[in-house]
Length: 429
Image: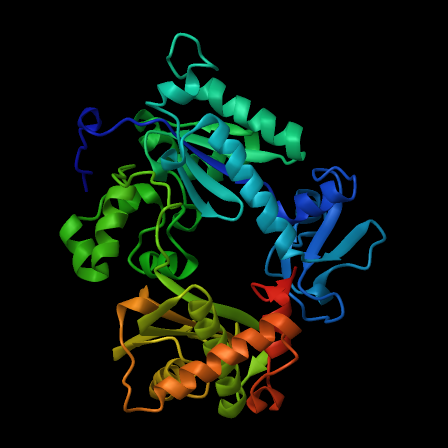
């Protein structure tokens, strides 16, 4: 089957740089200890006291020498004397991530920086005369020189090695970084490289295509990106919906999404998720966790003077389950920042969708936000009393700590209240 020809000359040819800090958590921990992140065998885990604790990051040498990667368990790590195991410090990593973003801002305006994750960002290097004139006096930004300068500064200031990918769009920059940049440091792909560099890739090697999706394609004889590029748009859209359209264009190296900073965005939702230390199967224990996450979501909303109408519940299953889990949402008929409203709705979503699987991760969030001043309480209900009660509780907790006052339900089996209050993302600060 012949691949439909794309006229790349009509597509935007931007200068997009994808930056990934190599083994970020592990590299930060190595630098903090005066060690070389590219030479030390170091693993970052959630809790050293638990043999089943997840490996959150592994240094490059640990991956190569002992085949220990992110997602492995602590008990899988060899007792070899050259392996250093440390507990995660999420506060430190978030602080360093912010410092790295501020470094990017020395070269680029905020609207040209898209923070994809704590350790990965896209940077738009073109059209930035105001910021680049001091670096390149003629006013013309040399994308490769600028990328190398940023790479040099990351190493000089923080001691952190990084992988980079340059491309005409966000997708090709990301794939260039993943496939080639992690090997040579900086990869530069153009539209001309699609047929010789993108199409030979196995499906699961390409960003945006997971193992399960690749497995589905293999059932119909599709194994590489080049073979995926032969499938008609109508077929992919019919089978995968909007994702099918994205697969069609990405397989041809086409991506029209724009790099946009998000620093001025208002919160779209507020909530908390946590990975459990063990599989939960008792509905009562699971609901206790949902209650505590609902309380945290409500507290965060009240702290920021916000309320919301949409409640989100995410439940992730254990690896031993066939399904991944479910994510559901429900919009109620009034704005709220009360624990009771969020919990009742989340509990209802759980009852409707849970079928007894082993649960390993739970998240609760409040969305469709508005300022508290933007809605009125029903004066003829008990909401006024509950609102005041929550405000008093927030004040007591702020003044005397999280152990001063808390719901009796947090004394029940399965409670994760202490972890919620003392960790970031479920891990130590």
